[in-house]
Length: 611
Ligand SMILES: Nc1ncnc2c1ncn2[C@@H]1O[C@H](COP(=O)(O)OP(=O)(O)OP(=O)(O)O)[C@@H](O)[C@H]1O
Image 1: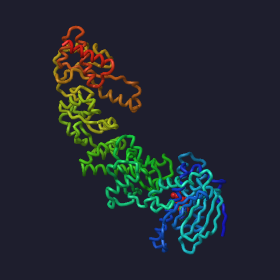
Image 2 (image 1 turned 90 degrees about the vertical axis):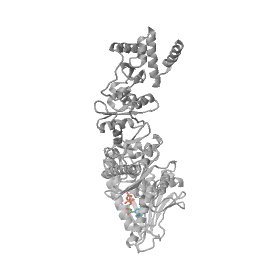
Image 3 (image 1 turned 120 degrees about the vertical axis):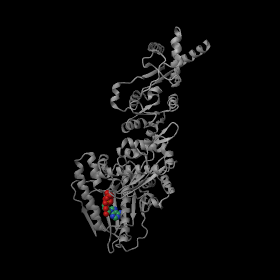
Image 4 (image 1 turned 135 degrees about the vertical axis):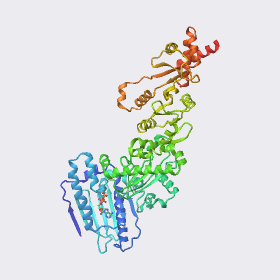
């Protein structure tokens, strides 16, 4: 028997279109054909289990081979096979009619809709024509008494179908590689593609005499069957280049209202650049799809590693479509919830261990709290802050901790923090001397995190320790008495202004403790935040302030003995002394540089010599 046919289709040739537009990546033809072979094999196994297939299953490997001379790639399976009629039904009719409809619709659409259309028509088999000038199918069905069939198509809309003398059950798909696709005749290239897409397929795939896949990756198993070692081993299989152990992991497993399995690993975070290196891999029924999981995984969890496997994620579709997809949205919510639950559990069960890991997971948690309201609600109970003494608190614990001492006269709790305990040492010290607690908030996201906490926590404001002199950081009713008269204060202020002569340094005289420094230079909290925002390019509107000049407050301590000496000094001596005290403050802040530093050193020597 030989049959020739032509597919009624209103365009001369759909293959150029497929070739050009179907997938941007030609290499995925192999993924599609191997997946079909695996599907056919699994279907046969199911038929066996149902008792509908009573023969011997035998060896069920899918074999991929390449013949460079003959310019062919062959994908062979021992699955359920197809009769001639079935080939016509599944390969010709469905695909071709699908394809013709596809072409019709395709013509008039914009790019995004085109992608959707491609996703809708399962044209996996036809991706073969992206690399082949001719494709042959040799197939023999598992059904007894049926003849083997041989189908050929050269990429036009014509096909031939004849009987074949294939004795063995299953399907061989033979691709005659096109002139422009020579690269796919290289065994090394095929091996790379197979390892990329087929590494975890559920049926053994053999290439050059070697099985290239693991048929039962651990995400398909029950967590109860697995040990910590299994999870760690798998992590290193996924990311052979990674030296570190994951901190912990979450085994995802849900079958309603969508289907999803996978393992998400929390990596050790050494530096930010590392984030992007080991990406989460997305699979659909154990077939690798992509490691661009944007939109499927909430953005803040992109920092995690691992695999997600879901047949419910639409595959060949555009980003915009994916974002709007209901299943994807649910998956997103589910993953967020799972991650929050896992963190809550770790916190509850092993607080000490959780604290140890905080420096690595804090970033995920803060990022999550900032970007996802639902996550914030869960995370606020286990998110930690650490004070300069190294002690960890939850937000509630910390509020409790500082409440008695750090309430200002308006009943606001003022949380003091440092972004650099070394550089701001003098201020941290001063705050601690007052009995205040100081938090370390020195991580990348902390300035945003502070902003969020101020919005969320009632009657709480945050101030960096160097935002003001210690007495004014938390304004209380009681004020330190000044030993100077108002006249003297004005005189002192003028003296300092003259000595400093810098319009960006706003001099004020304050009654501080005699133990405080003679002069303290601060950058008001709001000013620093605006400058921070400007620097990070955030807060768009901030640009209208132009480039903010540094605008510091110079607080002269009226109660320090130096104040008296400056006032009493004759002639130039007062100004010199004031300048010296001011330079000391600059020095303590690491702000004394260049010419000013040289002048300071010289003046110090003069003053010492004069004593
Ligand atoms: N190796 C094979 N053995 C048996 N049947 C096959 C084989 N390859 C393809 N088929 C049949 O041809 C049909 C069409 O395959 P094709 O790859 O075009 O689409 P699909 O697999 O149904 O969907 P998609 O690949 O887009 O997910 C399959 O559904 C299957 O019935």
